Amino acid sequence: MPLTHHWLTHAGLRTADNRDAYTQAQRTEAALYFVADGSSSRPGSGELAHALADYLHTAFLQLPTAVLSRDALAPALCAALRDARLELGRRYPQAACSYLLLALLPEAAFSLHEGDCCLGQLDSVGNIQWLNAPHCQANWRGTSSHADLARDPARHRLTRCFSARRQPVPQLSHWPLATAPQWLLATDGFWADLTPPQQSEFLHNGQVTQADTDDDISCLLVSAPRAVT
Image (cartoon, rainbow, N blue to C red; front, top):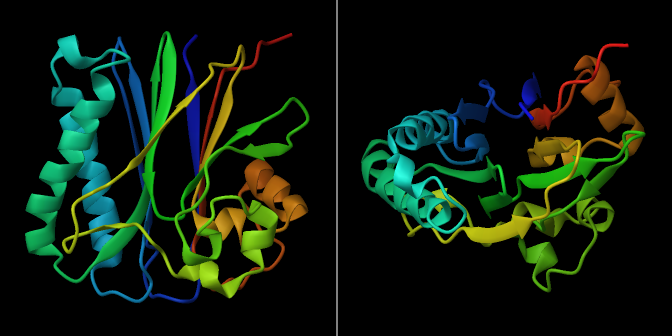
């Protein structure tokens, strides 16, 4: 079933530019959805987030059809991330960003991520089930809930990210395919800085009750089209 996507973003006050970025690319055999969150403390990080999104968009569309399969696509995308580091690291040597990539195939779904962008699924009434854990010192055991992490200042100290200083080491996770999926790719401004009611409000109208937020708030909602009755 074809999916639709909707990008929602709200610029925060911490930086002059919105450092959240996204892209999506569709091929007959597979689809790619991607979000990135540039560091607020490192120069050029917003530019890096957008450049990484553009790089992966182009790389995905140029992949041979033979690698658009459950077993071959993840290694091909990991190779693209390594190539992106070599090219973009020269342009943005001090920058860093978190990223989350979701790949959907007819028979499989998987994600790659480093940092604190998180993947979720929405149920029929709009509740969010978070699927992956952020890479941060506050979650060094990998067992903390998103609600607990949102209250812990140590969540801002990342243990993985995309930067010129290190090779990409993305976490690969495979997910079951839902009958009518609603996937949510969110930056930490969404999952950590908004309460569940504010998250619901943002998903419905792109607005937040607190107009002045420090962090950029962004999410990419990927869903099956609703039937017209």
